[in-house]
Length: 85
Image (cartoon, rainbow, N blue to C red; front, side):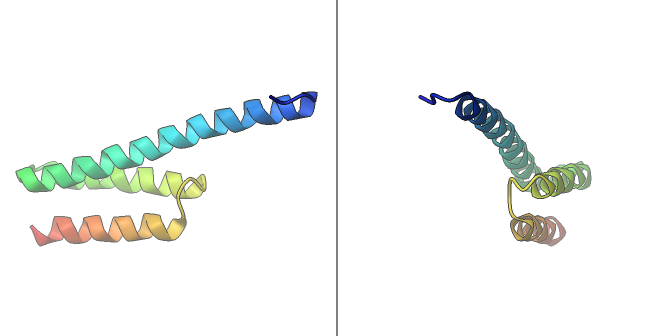
């Protein structure tokens, strides 16, 4: 356990950042999964879901939760998947 007050504050800060990052990652994962399932089912709302997924990926990359190239790669693969069907 941290002893100094600055170490205690750093611990609180890192815990809060970890929770925020985990929430952002969960949103990205959920939205990409939703697009993949919609494509499998042949849902008509795929374009709307893809747009929301783009937004989540861009926000995660902007917050440095995921790397910008990973966000770009995921967007590319999802687009390819949607246009393929």
